[in-house]
Image 1: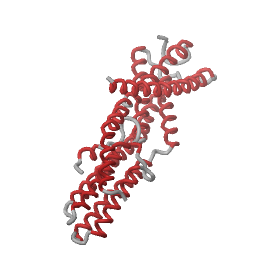
Image 2 (image 1 turned 135 degrees about the horizontal axis):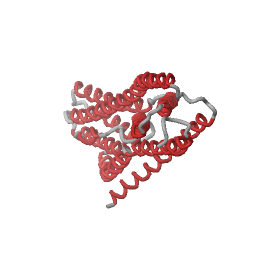
Image 3 (image 1 turned 90 degrees about the horizontal axis):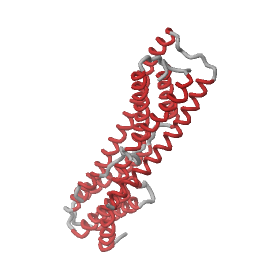
Image 4 (image 1 turned 180 degrees about the vertical axis):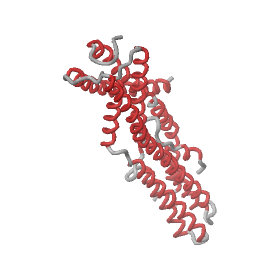
Length: 259
Length: 66
């Protein structure tokens, strides 16, 4: 019951935020509509203008599809790459723990295994709120390094090839962690969003100027275009930030691996 | 540097929080699937109503009055 309430609460908050955005966008659209319709601008209702408008909508569709497709595709690729980096980090830490079991002194290996498990638990708690430096995971990563240092410096009975492999797995995990934060910070530049929003509005406006005799067809085209454009824009925004929204990074690799 | 006992104690404390934290984050993620849908639906409705009642009623745009 408590969990259902939490879900409902999250849905209500998201709905209110979405409505607020839609209201702001609606006000802007109304302002532009008034400017065009009551600004004394001549409407393109002649047959020649209508033909040109139809052609323009067709050409614009191709350019718009390329631009929005590139943004969505790029963001999607980044999200997939991020999930791969998380998987690489989890695998490296799992291999680090397994390799540590080959050490001559089991107490040192056990400390390392515990330090890795602390790191994983911290990461699963923090999830998308994790930070590169000055965070619990950063300190836990340093603790893994301390344990590793103790094995390399104090454990004289463990073979060098095992120590070398331990260092390699630690470097791999550290590198994957750094790459994760690098990728998270990469975003589509702000002015691209304004260009996408402006071009969406320009394309949409063409449909308002189309002379369609049947009311049903007019309603159908407008509703489809409005919904498609707004949803595409929302999807692109959601994908751009891998820490928020529905399409975000997943730490399932840490949940499924054995440490 | 932490001792084995300290690590064990820290881990025990953290493991109690993991499930709850993961569940909350999953709820937050699932709830946000509606955000672009609701925004799209609300914006569609807002612009469509403006078009129908404000602009079309003036007879200034489009192909007809409906």
